[in-house]
Each structure stands twice: as C-alpha cells, then as structure tokens.
Amino acid sequence: MNGAGSLSPLIHLVDDDAAVRDALELLIGTVGLRVEKWASPESFLADFDRQSIGAIVLDIRMPGLSGFSVLDSLQAAGVDHPVIMLTGHGTVDLCRRAFKSGVAEFLEKPVDDELLLDALQQAVRRHVKSRQRHAADFAARQRYAALSEREIEVLGLIIEGLTNKEIGRALNLSSRTVETHRANVFEKLATPSLAQLIRRYAALVEASDESGKP
Image 1 (cartoon, one colour):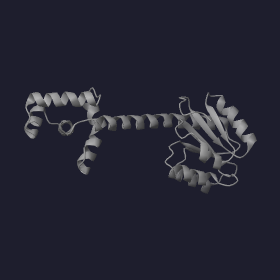
Image 2 (image 1 turned 180 degrees about the horizontal axis):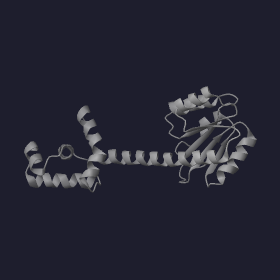
Image 3 (image 1 turned 90 degrees about the horizontal axis):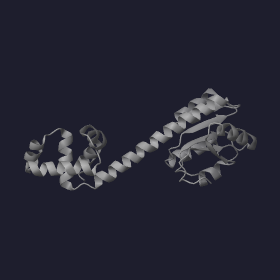
Image 4 (image 1 turned 180 degrees about the vertical axis):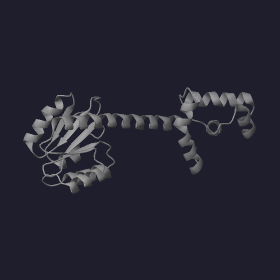
C-alpha cells in the first residue's frame, strides 16, 4: 500500500483484467503519476488509502460489484476522489448514468491515451484544490473556535461594517477596549485584511448566529 503521508498524487486503478491494469499503469506512469492496481472492487473498497490525493479509474463491468455499485459505495462513504469510468461496451444510457452519478469522465475501451491522461491530470488538479479548500476551511473553524465570546461579538459587528466607535456603543465598550478586541480578532484568525476576514469568516459568524452558539 502507498502511505497517506506521500504528497505525490496516486491513481487507484480498479479493473479485473490484468492486461488492462498493466497497460494503463505504464501509460499513467509516463506523466509521473503513481498507480496502485486493484484486481477486485471488494479489495479496493476495503483497503484503499482514502487520505491519498489523486483519482480513481474504475471499470464498469467486473465480477461481483459493478463499477456503479462501487461508485455508490464511495459516495455513501463520503469519498471525495474524482472517478473516471471505463467501459468496453459504452451506450448513451451508461454515459448519461455515469455523469448523473458525478463521475469526472466516462471513456470507452480501448481508451484513447491522450484523453485518459488529460482527464486524469485535470481530475488530480481538481482534487488537490478541493483538499486545499477543505484544509483551509478546517483551519478557519479551529481559529474561530479559539475566539472568546466577546471577540466573536466584535467580529460579527466588524463584518456588519460597523466602525470601532459604533461597536463600542453597541457593546457598551470603550474605544480602546474595542481596538484591543479588534486586534486580537485579526491576530487569532491570522487574517491580514478586512476583505479576507469577511470572505473567510462571515459564513461562520452567520452559522453561529443562527444556532445561538459561538
């Protein structure tokens, strides 16, 4: 198995045909992507590294679980990897079903090398960006949770566009105290500008207001 600690993208290749797995591994390797091959969908679902960055290449017709059954299981488990589906018997209905199920690409065998590589590289880029967004969102929630109740109140009023004097009047605080809270908010949230503060934290403030919890 490839460990979750590796930063290089990993392509999970799920196909019951050994010749296809070997050929696609060689092809995908030409663009510097690592490949982990899976002969059965059951073993893939049980053991693949969900923390890896990359994509999944999934055959539709396999003994046991079909590609669509695997896709259903991945989605039910909240797996965020982009999926590229392959089939040797493509139809309009299969293609429509695949895209409605959220696959990144649907390709027929024998696969066009350039189409597959392009689809994989695009999928990997999207996955990297998605994971970066999730990491940033998690970090923002952690920083927000470190604010005091008063700092959260001040943050909410900053986002509403109130000046320090207006915040002081709203919370019955001196201007100096408001300035201190304001400085603490920007420091704890590691946000250098008002625009970034609003972009990153307005939704969290709104959610807190709706739930009644800081």
